[in-house]
Length: 159
Image (cartoon, rainbow, N blue to C red; front, side, top):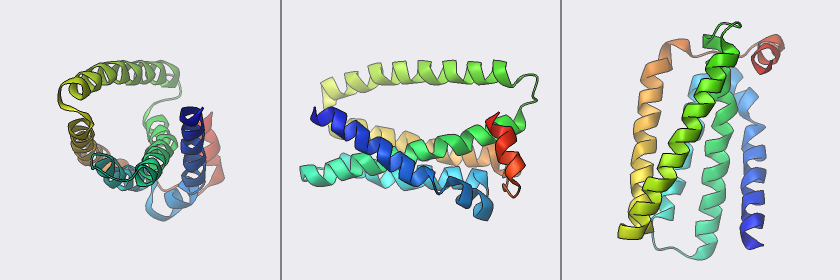
């Protein structure tokens, strides 16, 4: 039961941070909003690698999950703005497949690291990969930073 409650709170944190996504998109653009959310989640991941009280670990887990997941709608907006309407279904399906495959292999690799080295190294390695991913994401998409100024752009990207 405590695990389900923790996952529920992670979803509530995602909802909380996700509500700010459109406002952030208007102010700094979709790309910088996604990068901001992802970058803000990294310190909470690093905190999880430390020997800390359970209450701080749980709060860090919720914050990291909420911030990282709140970047997903912004990243989806970037994806749909770069893909023609005719190819969106195919490309989105392919991206979901790749995402799920990477999670599957990540779970296997993470479990192996935890088994042989413990949790600390797993969290630190993951934090390092997040830092690299944020930097690569910025350099790959910096020329397409979209500022959502009109509601119809949001509606179009959701469809």
